[in-house]
Image (cartoon, rainbow, N blue to C red; front, top):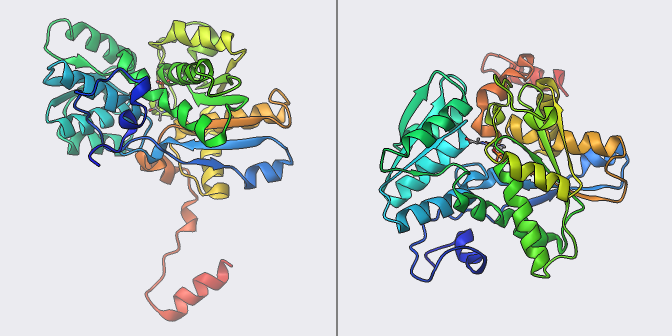
Length: 355
Ligand code: F0G
């Protein structure tokens, strides 16, 4: 079979025709993993599942949207795509453009994108335009330049992106057999939380689930416009993926939060990193800092009782931990690395000393 991705699987709910040439890298169908050790230690009866979106082809949920956006760009005759990005969108745009044989231009904030994402954008051959500004500046420039240059915007303001991303909610309902009571996501531009809500409400209207979840959005303290209720001028956080002060899907996210009886909350960089480390050490699941915030949020709200005992909760882990090796290494205890001479005695001693 030529196409293995989500467009083929969900084509009845997506804006494609039989003649559409699908640009796919086999995205979607990511694991839904039940957390065991952390919840057991907490002594709660909440069922908490991780939707591990870092296992998409370029290592983040962006591939779900990018397969649709690039498929539709190619269908409309476009020969080039453009995006502003904190890293993951640029990685996905670069890869899917390469697959389609078209050009990708990516605007990134200089010095503020994780190493793995930069490597991806570079190796796939996109044209990288670094700006001395943040994501919000880049997004405005992309909107302005697209008026003059023959390029298709593939940021989440492109409606096809959200169409692709809504399929994550479909997969969750199909795997669980029901919609969870709560769905937790990190929020930057708020495209993904909007897409998930679309997916959940669509399946509900189609009679494929009895209910829709309460949608919970979490942000970094220094980049928390939804918590503050106003756009933020100079967003700052170690979770560079969500270092965004002017979310593009502002209205949609406010509305869905209200409609679903949800809420927004925020976390310090320290709390974000602690949760990232806890997931790796206690569950064997490695995600990037921005992704860990969804679990930080769920755990805080379970502890406080805002999420009641007996609930089912899904947290989206949006990007793989390998995206940001610098941050991972920096927060580890460097003394865990033992330097020895290559002799049996020294290696044996190192093991026995650390049993
Ligand atoms: N998590 C990760 C790992 C992300 O890369 C992003 C967004 C988000 C969460 C937030 O999703 O914007 O839909 O609310 N990254 C974009 C990018 C901005 O350029 O890669 P959102």
